Amino acid sequence: MASATARLALGQCKYAVVMLPEAIRSDVEVLWSYHNMGHALRPCDAGIGLGSHDLGVAIVATDLYHRGMFPHLIFTGANAPTTIERFPQGEAVAYREYAIEHGVPAEAILIDTTAANTEQNLKFSRALLDEHGIEVRSVLLMSRPYQQRRAFATCRKVWPEVDVICYSRPLSLDDYLASIGDTKKVVDMLVGDTQRIDIYAERGFAIPQEMPDKVRAAFERLVAAGYVSRLV
Image (cartoon, rainbow, N blue to C red; front, top):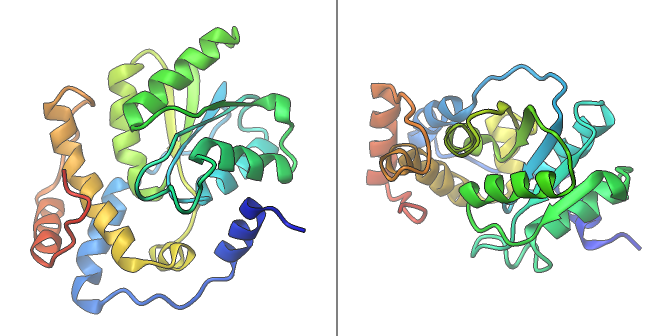
């Protein structure tokens, strides 16, 4: 019988039709594009999968490990209100289960089961690597698509000496929405991550990132339209 993580992966592959309201499509597409860092893939010393509600992080991490993009893989994440029902065993544990079931050797994986935010994801992953004597000059950060820019800005703040590449499962916006199956949840989180680019830089959690006027305008319209559940 397939495990819970395997069943979740299969479910993500059977995309249902999920409609993005046309009234907000252009604004959602603007934010979606803004958060994609567009980094070119290249081999790194370690891969770090940032925990979330999205099993796609484990899926892309497994694929990239098999493609030789990194010899060491860290999954990091405890639970959040958006993940506790989906991954009751914890985000990092669920990701590790998926990766092992799909051929990643257990000895290649380290997990941090305590991180509760992106800053902790990175600090605790770095500590794990140091603890195991793994020298790292470059990392490949894998996250939800709309978390790329925030992950990059946070890594440059808390781990400035490392070369960082950001990457996500290469899905179109519509395919990603279908893979998650909840349009409002994704748009709410996309809006929330956009707000955090400015706020987290102001609070010293991340380096500042330029935000074009069209991105700010799209963000403000989506807030006005009620996509606010993930605002700080």
